[in-house]
Length: 452
Image (cartoon, rainbow, N blue to C red; front, top):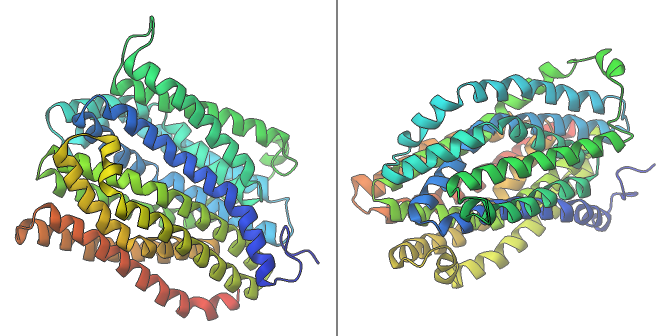
């Protein structure tokens, strides 16, 4: 009996081969998603450090609103992967379309209050002057594209979960190409097109995501798995809505805790001025070069764990986790060494300001030392979600970030007077602690998963 796509006997060699087949397009997808952010940062940095602070801070705010999109995509993706492991495709399109219907009212509510949100939230982060006004203009435009920010990750999650990661990759590549073309044109102007600055970056983001969604619709229509009639869908419409919501809320909170904690950290860093804040934004986005491909590896583990649960093959689950951890740690170690050695040069790509380079270089070195632990944490969080447990990763994030990282950052930087050094130190400590907690919980949950 054929268990997964290319696994016959469940040997570790077969699992490693299947993991590479799934993970390569998923890693590439996440790389191009990160490239999307870096392109914006690169072009916006030419406007000035106030623009960098505005856009990077706005990006964190947007992620906060996209947390529910992540939750819905994780929940629906888990159900789809498990159904695929059971060899049953008839429920899969209903899961996806229920997930999309759920996303509509959420994105519309955000759109309805976009004006108030755009004007009030940047000040919460401590942005002032030009950084504040630029953030407001950026958010006002991107909020209008919020429905696209929901649809794109939900459909891509579904494509990955049925073993079509190459299609998800194509969506992100097309969106990136359009963004790379439009960014310099809209930001700096070309011919009759006037320079729009930060607004141009926002418009480019919305247009490129729209094009990505249009390609997704094409893939869905061509798919034998997802292409069902409206009448057939309505026979059991919203049957999976409640199960998706139950899994989506904890998954959304998992990301929400991360984002809220970063907003608090941004607020603490902003106490020390715009230059440390700009350095912080550059380092965080630079490490997404590592983090986003790690999400790709985590997504591959997520899919394979879901298949294993659906096929009732506990042995495949354990071997899949082992393979995922090995590839992830090896990958991150290589990149972290590069970041540690060439930290000043990397920061210098985005800013020539000596203070920003000094702040950013030191922070980048500390992050590089602890980042393998982040990779392990990502894999374990996706493993838990793959078996349908979205609550545990949410609780781990809440405890580690709000009861450890933030108190340490405030204590070291403000109370003890170490300034930005205190913040830079708190984050690596939190990285390692989260890894240790997940490792313990994984060992404790193995017996329970064996009974599923």
